[in-house]
Amino acid sequence: MGDDHHRGAGLAAVCEQGVDHLHSMTATAAASTLRQIRERFEARSFRKNADRVHSYRIDDERFAEQLLAAALSPEADAGIKRFFGSEYFVHWYVVNRANPGPDQNRNSFLWHCDKGPRAHLKLLVYLNGEEEHGGRTEFLDLKATQALARSGYLFGRVADRRADLAPLAERVGADYRPRSWRMAPGEALLFQPSSVLHRGVMPIRAARYMLSICLLPSPVPWDEALRRGLISDLDRDPKWHGDAMEILRGLGRAYA
Image 1 (cartoon, rainbow, N blue to C red):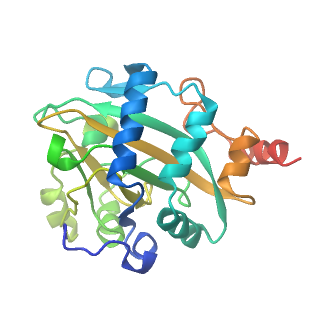
Image 2 (image 1 turned 120 degrees about the vertical axis):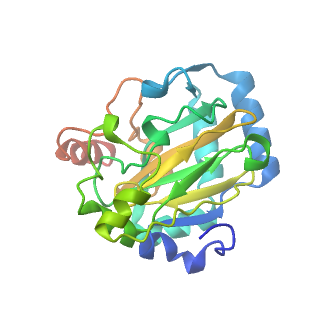
């Protein structure tokens, strides 16, 4: 299913299908945010896609809080709370620039599920639109992902990731119908990254700018948690702690 899928679907789509398409910022707000990021912050190589993807070092705490507040719109906030059944906090976030190159898909641009707890979400906010850059994000739904899990593909080696899962899906009887949306500036995708197969599709005309936010359940609202210092910095911290109790201890320190 593609662009005809109606946005929000009663805010149940992320629970029932694993992904939802929603409004995060207005196009004007997205353009203003992107302009400020490009003018004020340095872009550096980003992890395994270092030659193709760069991240911006947002070293202004006030700007970071304003950025997250803009992204976590009422529509996004409601969907996130519905999924968790509670408040939530920002585990980490990153602003990436992916440079065009349609024929060199690898790493996150191949089909995969993310590591991490089942009960976590990711919000991808497009700061510029598909019409400008030609990139997108593709998903399989929960049912198709569960069927493909029988093949052992989901959490295999990065080197074994594929751009086309049709032959594998046919072998295990999975309904292979990748979904994507023509994203406008400020639109977002809220999804279960460890439970639905997904992949980025490289931009072909210009750089794609995206804000990615990783979310976990919390006893207090995200902005209070942020002000108390409960957030990971991907420049120095791992994406996930070796022991989940480390996060709980962080919660205890933040709310003591």
